[in-house]
Image (tube, rainbow, N blue to C red):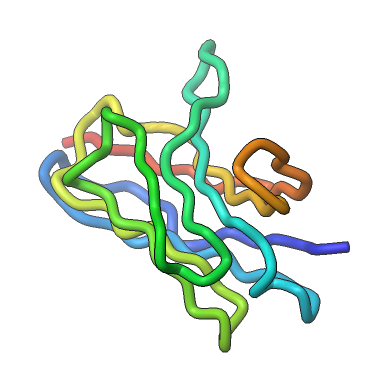
Length: 118
């Protein structure tokens, strides 16, 4: 069992930056692919970014490519989402997820709200 707790959300102005963190419980964190997803009001949850267990490979949604960076620290059981050049359309609840592969997301956090507004 893995428990995920996101933090770092908040209100930020357009063009600003924010870093989300996801702390995982358990000793098997380093074996999981980790991902970030988001869900805006009235919309389906969508993929944002993922990183494999070793941290050597990442993937991003086209909408965030070049602006967001996912990273992980296996010693701290934590995955990060560094968000730059934020836009109003990035406003969502952001969720952290863990899975054995990017095809099988098993564990989810409770989400953290990110609001981009002036």
